[in-house]
Image (cartoon, rainbow, N blue to C red; front, top):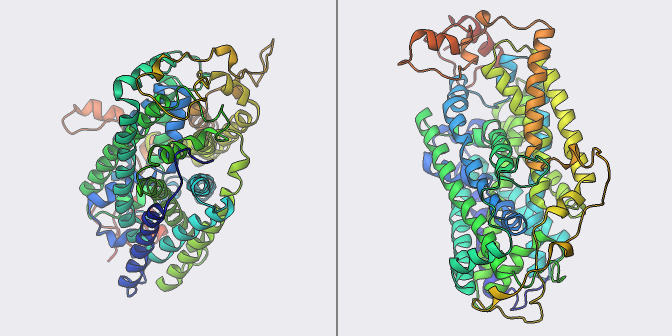
Length: 607
């Protein structure tokens, strides 16, 4: 892939080099400054001294990766403005996080959020959900490593394999040596770079296409003004319903049950600051996602007469954004470097979050229970070894991505959908449904995961033809000219729908045309619903818990406010006793067995 206007110059390489150097420098700085503190509490939580603003920015860019910067505009380009609802779907979950999950995890003083599942159910379920989460995030971070490597390969002589290795090495090194402080403060720098990069691209590309009026005209003519698409058919890839409902469940799973995010807000000094950090992160997230989506709209106006994929200038849609960047900024030295740095920043923030949080999950949920009496220095050394090993595994995963025949966004959402929905259902049963027992929760998680895997893998293998059929029309009639004219380009006719690739015709219903064709945005929701209903049903079949005997410390009513009538509050407690003020505190290094005893009787005071 080579842009028509120019290549990656010396200034661009310098800008990218500075970005990568800053990331490494921050990691090395915190490794040196904290060398006297060998505790895992400092390595994973910064001794709970971080402020809400840096934590909030870190939260926002933890999941604003290269996937958002590159792949989301490609989805808008292919399927229209309905994808702009993604920003809304990213915002809603913060309500649940701030109202329920942050207070609960703060109350229990958790190091791993999956520790809650042992307090509520048993050790087996804790380790099962931890393992599912580790597997899911390894796939996700592997994909995020692949995208910037693809960009570097496109604009430099460096081969894809070496690009992947370089990306992984830098991120793994600064995360391993610096811990959570390095991750958070590097994320702050990267958040600024991401904002500069995507705004710069939007301003410059708007100048080229002639403003928003021309963009909207091109979208209308290209059948992409489908922001309000209320077709209830679940097999349509992108509708208002699939994006708002399906993606909201998806992001609920990411934000409510993610160790990466929990580790950040648990690093704040107080519960109030933790909530503030999530709100700051949510607002910043929505702004960045919206800008990236609008860049996809502009990108369609830019290539409305000459689609780079159909004209074989690039191989797949995930390459279109870097291709446009090289074209738009061809006469502005350094700007291509800024945008490539933006892509790298998004990836480094996401991968560092994944490595740091997953290392903590492995330490707390698998390693410490087997070796409970080691020193803090030994645990810290083990943590760094886990982080480095995870970096290697994620690198290996990135090498597999080029062989998957669909868009990166679909791969990511489908991969998360494998287990994210069932894990969210498990926490939902534990927190809000007091009758759920451990057998029901395990059965629900397993059945939900099995169904989600079936649907996701079937969709990736058998349904690509269905997705191809839904791609909106694209045009190559203007490819004779290598220049773009903002005033003349809008009159060029679009190719007819009949010229688009079509699905293999079928005369009867089958799994390929029904279940496997369900939009990938619903995959997480399918896993969630199946796991939830199966878990509750299995609990009643195997002898459900008695609500009046439930530990109120581990339960949260959906609605509870001291200004509501007592009858209303009692109804939403579902029979669980009202929580009593503690006459004790749980120290930071309290063993899990003592936490369980404290939560059950509430009388012991540990000094």
